[in-house]
Image (cartoon, rainbow, N blue to C red; front, side, top):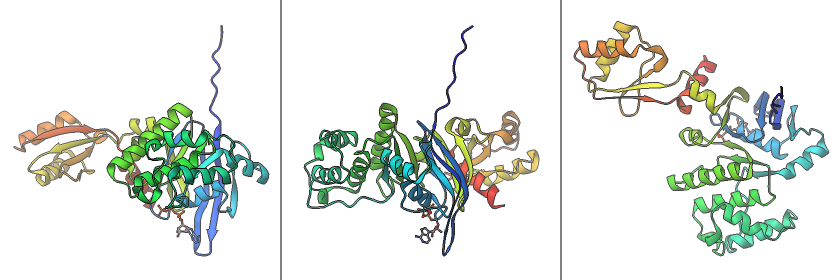
Amino acid sequence: MIKGVFRLKPAVFEARNVSKQYRSGFALKGLDMKIMEGDIYGFVGENGAGKTTLMKIIGGLVQPTGGGILLFGQQGKKELCAARRRIGFLIEMPALYPHMSAEENLTFYHHILGIRNPGRIGEVLQAVALTDAGNKKTSQYSLGMRQRLGLAVALLGSPELLVLDEPVNGLDPAGIVNIRHILERLAKEQGITILISSHILSELQLLATRYGFIHKGRLVQEISAGELLQSAQAMICIATPNAERAAELLKRKLQITDISFNTAGELQIPKASVDLELLMAVLLQEGISVEGFNLSAPNLEHYYMDLIEGVRR
Ligand SMILES: Nc1ncnc2c1ncn2[C@@H]1O[C@H](COP(=O)(O)OP(=O)(O)OP(=O)(O)O)[C@@H](O)[C@H]1O
């Protein structure tokens, strides 16, 4: 019998018990984390949780005060330096010369990075959908275009890993979707692994294949997109003009305690905590009219809020 060989993808990045202490206190506190080749790793945490600090440690811009990191399995000082050439960063926007075109700006970075392939500038402009605007002065670029140009700079060295700190921050909806499509293509067509932080969780959920939740400098949990979907977080949403009364009834008659209201004023109940037939029967019996009913898929935002609430308790 021929046995199939199941090969695990290698870790591209690993943090082992990483701490960073500033004078003001700890930014990272014994953080462990692993990004596997091919992951689009969504890095989620509130302001000040430590996301940028970790990204800066990956880039060598900040040194940890405890623990250490591995990049592509390498951990010596020299080896980490060499491994960083295989990574593209968009942590802070690279300086762009406003009076120069995108092509000229890229030529400048191309030179600084010592990249030999002259065709690379055209390739990265195409990858970020800026080919047609390549001759335009960057002073005339929108924020979304500038952000894509920043991504193009990060791509110049043909990285295997991209580290992106809130790349859609401040962009309009079209700009956000543009960036998502570009990143999806880079992951799918070029096999680039991506570490991306964002506060827009609904958007991040459309892109990421894995998530890491960081709270006060510690990684609280890692979960795959598949595990998120299988989590018990699917919600039943009920639209009724008598939402308050319905909630009170369901609490009293069915002992359902975790009822909330969404922004549309609908009742929200975790699917796992109800018997649907019984719930409908109670509402109808009590003369509560149900105008709409739907089941919302497990949602990254709910999952994260529940997780963090649990950690805070
Ligand atoms: N250079 C620094 N000197 C002192 N404290 C710092 C420095 N950089 C970051 N910090 C502190 O470390 C903590 C983590 O900051 P960090 O920027 O890594 O968080 P973050 O998760 O990226 O937050 P945000 O989502 O707001 O960008 C914060 O309390 C911050 O004030």
